[in-house]
Amino acid sequence: MKALNLKCLSALVILLALLPIGWADDRDTSADKGTFVVLVTWGDVDNTPADDVYIEAHGFVREYNSEKSYTLSMSRAGRYEASLPPGVYDVFVSEGVSVRACKRVLIRAGETMSWTLKLENDYVYTDKSSTGVR
Figure 1 (cartoon, one colour):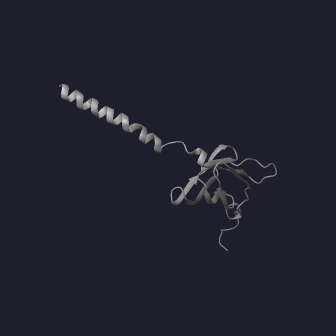
Figure 2 (cartoon, one colour):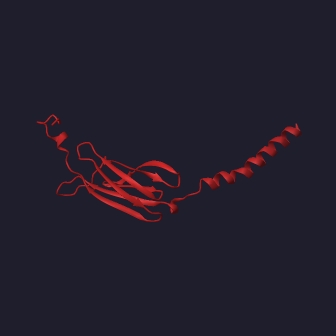
Figure 3 (cartoon, rainbow, N blue to C red):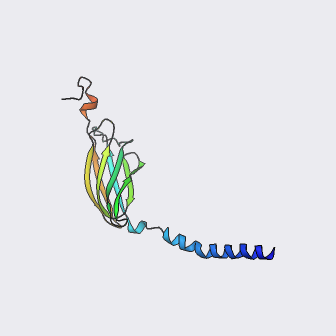
């Protein structure tokens, strides 16, 4: 019985000793990232903030030595943002009845990059007399 308790205690000590090593790999690296903000309006005369817009940043991230994609989240109506590792990204904006948009941006650590975009109607979807084929 004492041998079993000693084995359990030894295993617990080893696990506790290894626990901080795992935490070191998960450290907060937000200081090593940049912030990317996209401000989107519907394109009306009132510049109404757009909601339900899909925004994706795709690029080669040196930190991971591979291509990565990040979806921007809406923090409030018309404002989409993400914390991104430094790199060059192609940013794609898509919304159901609007012309899609794309822009290349450079994200630097510790800096905020922003893009203000006014959506335009995509007449392929809004013109009911057209079949969309020309």
